[in-house]
Length: 437
Image (cartoon, rainbow, N blue to C red; front, side, top):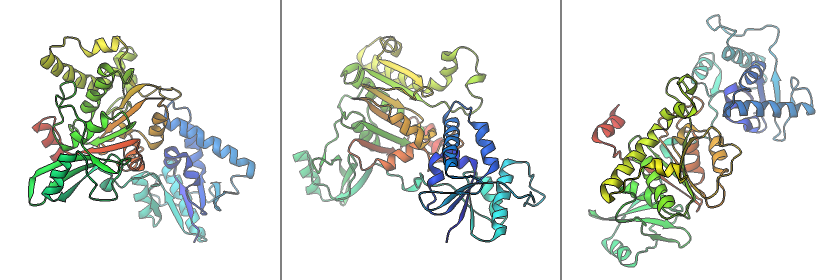
């Protein structure tokens, strides 16, 4: 049976194409949502861009007829901008009617009172879903781009095999995979049956159809050595020039950013496969934003870029200790080999021949991730790092962020690889805090 789907403003701001995501049902946009779009349209960010795009789409649809009467969509459904009846408020007195959320609730209640079709309120606002449920309304989150976080592709798996199989793998440096459903570049841990200490690590090469050894330098990368199995899988992907997109997910302290920067330095400063290492991150503060900080733009950005500088200081400190090199990362920045900048101005750019690291990628929407990846020019490698459980962007969550989205959607592509890092290596204190606090 056809339904009314009443869309909250945050759904439109999250995904412009949500207007066409409900099949042959009737899409209802409350008039107050148009007012809210007008308020957001001047913002110079992804939210503002989406608000402007939705407004343009609705304006284009006006050519098919008055929006308040409803127009037909190609999917077989209809879309209309709903103007509440003169009766006004359909809510209990406890809910203040002049709030936009409550006006959207009132629209859903009015449609429900008509009784001709089931009504479903679609919103990404948890509290609004709770209020709708308390009023007897069906309310759902918008989930067209969600990935079930508990089932997120890890990028590796374990197989119990015989001793002969592991010995054969070490002897031949290749092995027919023990399963037929491996993804490209997926890591494999071979464990001997009855002897868990006898293991082997491999990666699935889809072109060859075989498990192959990990290609990791024995002396480490810029003094950084992988400390656990997941880090070894990650380093193998980071150093493989044929893998143009690598996504690394994991809690704080698992070494995502450190490994990515070390591999990027090797590929740019040492091997010169790429002309520049570009390290970037979105600006999502835990408190006040950039405008409240003193100083010029470079000084304002320092607090957000400091985690990158911390990793560079660690890498160059280890490098000086092991090899006696005296130059620091500032020299590489002066030479143009290393560049650190925010993601604010990425739209419209073309980025060729670069090793690009996007840190804190979990704060990006799927559309923003797409925008970044489509900036990649010829011979550019992109590395996305982040923790899907530490999100500062109020419009996404652990299931709908760009990092999780990319990992799941590209797991079958030979050009991409993903690893979920599980064990923290920053310190015993950091690992305990990440697990228990």
